[in-house]
Amino acid sequence: MTASDRPVIDPADDLDALFQSRAPVDPPKAVSDAICRHCTKSLHPGRGASAEKRVVLSLLISGGLTGLLIGVGVAGGSAGATLSSALYGAAGWAVIQAFVLFFGLARPPGRKPARAVRLVIAVVVPILFLGYLTLTASGRLPFETFSQGATASHAVGCGLVSLFLGALVSGGVLLLWRGTDPLTPGLSGALVGLVGGLGGAVAIGIACPSHEAWHLGFSHGLGVVALVFLGGAVGRRLLCP
Image (tube, one colour):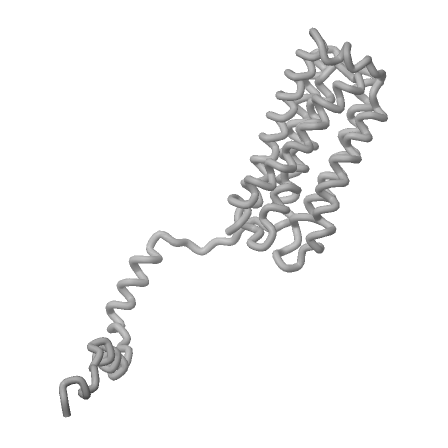
């Protein structure tokens, strides 16, 4: 037999045979116990808040902001029929917020309504809110007048305040529901943004003295749409376990 006829032996085959011949060995019980004690020494048994409690706390966050802005509105001179109609509107949209929370977030993962149904809620409710603002407007300026001077400055400032207030509510609700949706965290986050956006818009609607249609749509309504998208982006991180 020549050298070229000799079989080539791969050293890796010897290593594989060596490892396969060794059965796995469990560590001694004392070592296992020490590992368990080290890994669990700072852990304590506990249970997160129930879905019902999270819904109630979410509504309280939004309602507390609305109550604060009611005080601002009263202090600023909003009273009588204007304040009464705003309060009726706030109560109606609080019911919508509760519906979104119960229907879109409270069910456990895997048992929530179909994704398409929840997506329809995230799209249709902001449209309904914009329609509500249009119907409750006291008048409409020409867009050229609205987009210039003091009216435009007021609209920008009011819109930023509405967006900020809605972001506060959305942030609080996101923290309440963090880590609760491993399957559709982005969609759940969009619904949280919807709840927060409605809370901020309704609250600023009570304190804001302007009831002009363009102002309501741009300054109070577009923040709701923006927070739906922002909530979806942030929800992918906070709501996923």
